[in-house]
Image (cartoon, rainbow, N blue to C red; front, side, top):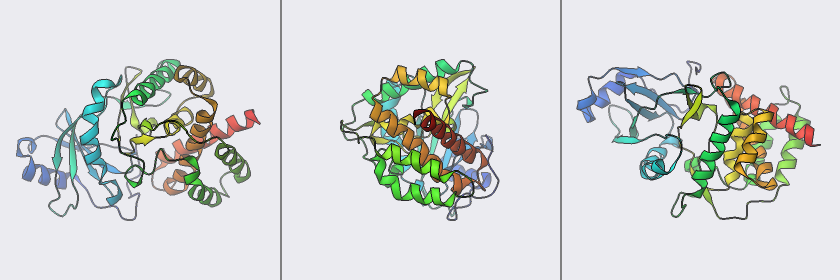
Amino acid sequence: MLMSSGKMHIDEVDIDAALVRRLLTAQFPQWADLPIAPVRSAGTDNAIYRVGSDMAVRFPRIEGATGQADKERQWLPRLAPRLPLAIPVPLAKGTPGDGYPWQWSVYRWLKGENATNERIADPAQAARDLAHFITVLQRIDPTDGPSPRSHNSFRGLPLATRDVETRAAIASLDSILDTGAVSAAWDTALQSPAWSGPPVWIHGDLSPLNLLVQHGRLSAVIDFGCMGVGDPACDLQVAWNLLSAQTRDVFRAALVVDDATWARGRGWALSVGLIALPYYQSTNPVLAGIARRAIDEVLADHTLAA
């Protein structure tokens, strides 16, 4: 997936292949002579470069993303053996240098392309695979897992904690969306009972950008920067940012989820989409398109339920 060439954040640092080469030479000379190529990605927190044929390096673009690497190094090796889809495997930790201010990471390269409806051979199977991944992730012991806060963009907290930011986004989209319909859908989501069960593991950002497809089938889940333990509804947003109305039914049946959690999941998809759309509509058209799709799918669901 492609993104615009301009920066997405006002506080984004400069990163290029030459910097990657210099840091590899200084810190990991065994890899310094391997080919380095930028990975054209619509991701927002990290710049990614492929190193050789089987590694990737991720450099935080903004200070707010700098805590993700330590969290992934701590938890991904523990989660990976238990999950039914491949996830990133951290290989090494880079440190600040040559003007770059933060730590960075080296990962095993995962083959595949970002999930799109055109690349998925059997959408119903993809829905079942997603449900299985989420179910297995939620069953892993969450003891000592990171609670939601700034490190994961507060994913997994009660939906109501997003109310102020979501309503501000709705107001900013007055000329683009039917804000009355959007507000009504958001109000409905907020009326759903809060999660009363124990916190569970969540990926936190399940979207087409963080799902890989090989040979027509889901093969990997990437970018666990928003992972934590909290309300499982957060991970249901994929039902609206990727799946169709038909495959949502397959997904829900395979997931076995209660009505309140499903309604909060719809609210998560709406809120994330609404906040992303005005922020990225000029700098990241791919992400803006995913956000708009999620909003439209939620509104269609809300209309049918009314």
